Amino acid sequence: MRAEPCHLHVFLIATSEPRGRAAIVLADIRSPRDLKDLTPEQLARVSSEIRSFLVHSVSRTGGHLGPNLGVVELTLALHRVFDSPHDRILWDTGHQAYVHKLVTGRRDFSRLRAKDGLSGYPSRAESEHDVIENSHASTALSYADGLARAFHVRGVTDRAVVAVVGDGALTGGMAWEALNNIAAAKDRPVIIVINDNGRSYAPTVGALAQHLAVLRETGHDGLPRPSVFEGLGLHYIGPVDGHDIGATESALRAARDVGAPVVVHCLTKKGRGYRHAEDDTRDHFHGIGAIDAATGQAVGSGSSRTWTSVFAEEMVRIGASRPDVVVLTAAMLAPAGLDLFAGAHPDRVFDVGVAEQHAATCAAGLAAGGLHPVVAIYATFLNRAFDQVLMDVSLHRAGVTFVLDRAGVTGDDGPSHNGMWDMSLLQCVPGLRLAAPRDAVQLAAQLQEALSVSDAPTVVRFPKGRVGPEIAALERVGGLDVLARTVPARDGHDVLLVSVGAMARTCVDVADGLAVHGVGATVVDPRWVKPIDEALPRLSERHDLVVTVEDNVRAGGVGAAIAQALHDAGVAVPCLNFGIPADFLSAGGRDEVLKEIRLTPTALEREILRRLADRSRPDTATGTQPTGDALAASSIAS
Image 1 (tube, rainbow, N blue to C red):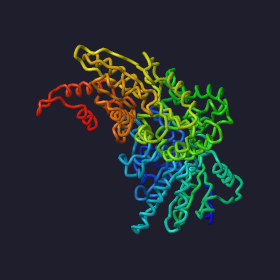
Image 2 (image 1 turned 135 degrees about the vertical axis):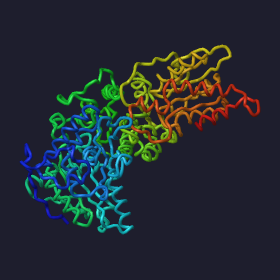
Image 3 (image 1 turned 135 degrees about the horizontal axis):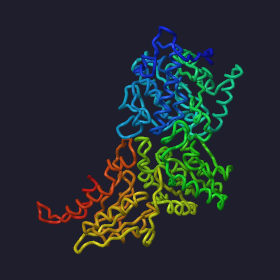
Image 4 (image 1 turned 180 degrees about the vertical axis):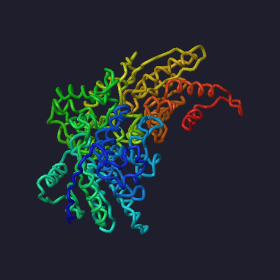
């Protein structure tokens, strides 16, 4: 079923426009229509200017530089062949959509991934050209299948559905679930463009990567090789040089005319046109902070350690003393902090590709085989493996440790990357134990504690960014660390502040602020927030109000679990819970987002004082004091 191969066209990149023809520059491209009539020379110039723009802009703001430098010509070809937004172009993962943003009229990259600036991913609020705003991989093919089915049901025949998916995203199981359905429907054309650069965050792994490597050889020696896609019944066109606009356009037009599901296999180079990114072997330029564009070196990074680096260093130490410890990553070896472990213990590292579900259940199998696996992923991606954590790990009482990086508010990557659901999802998993370290010392200690558990899953979660100074405990009560204690003024209120993880410094600051108003406060860090330590209800009885603060959605989170524990223990002290609202948070710096959702010391102090004042004020209707239940109910409604 192989479609006719496309001839490769080579365009000469002119250094200047022919006399008498107006020079086309990037500033002249305000919509995809402006690309339609450009000459090869003009396209080459626009491609060069786009790359210069990306390096200049993203080096200042940070963002996904390497992936976007690699799709310049492919994006131009897509918009010349198809008529977006009438034709639907879907970008899998979305970190390769900066060029798409530029040619669809979005030029202001000065606040990329910042509050009130451009999203780092497709955004339907920004443009009608953005169909989906997924930034979790391997989903675009399912969206495409659904769109094609909808057009078929409605009798729409003049709109193409195009899904651009990376070779790395094809390691995710959901992509193959979609392919299984797409290939079976010969009358529902979907054009699948594989952007094959041999990498996701890291080199693509597994049998699929090996197969794509074989197919790439067709472009070198001209010998046709059967593809797995043809085995599924899909038409296959390629491989095509994705940096040759003419060849790519020819392939896309041929695919559009097939009238059935078809794969267009485009070969691209990540970081194309920027030497530092092209030479990058560790994918530092996949997603960057601010850099010096001339040298490619990070700027303004300081010397403070990050949470990820603390985890990475501790894992190397653990690996040296625990030969049973192995690690798994879902295509994110370096971002998840496992590259140091891989250097020290290469035979004990398993990259399973973009496959969090498989990682979790594979880990259960490793545990059954006598090892202790550590699954290191971003907190937002744990959502994808919840069923496996519940039924494949916890049900089997498997000694697996999940390490969740980027937990809580991550900020600049927008709503899809905030790791704000994990502690709520995990509260209902039987037997699971959940740690939220407050600083680097506790991260190392609690990781060791987690790895000592062999008969249940354990989770250690920590935020993005730089780890702050150690917050030493004054004493330990049960399993709780007491971090601060202030004495109330005479007849003043006494509050128990329960800080969760990285919110410890915030809670200590709140206690200091309350003391100014004569309100006493004891700040405790539970360390392990699931199960709730039995010392917490006993300690709560000595206070007028319990306040929980967590960097997680409040609905079903740690605060809710503590309130339930107090109720079950017969403790009548009201419990006021602060956390992230159950909403999708807009992009912005972590501090900006925390301020917006009122998880700052000033905002928390003000709200606690207001609630205490309400509690002390006689009810205007009955002349009675509000009950603890009434206060607790008001906290839930806020």
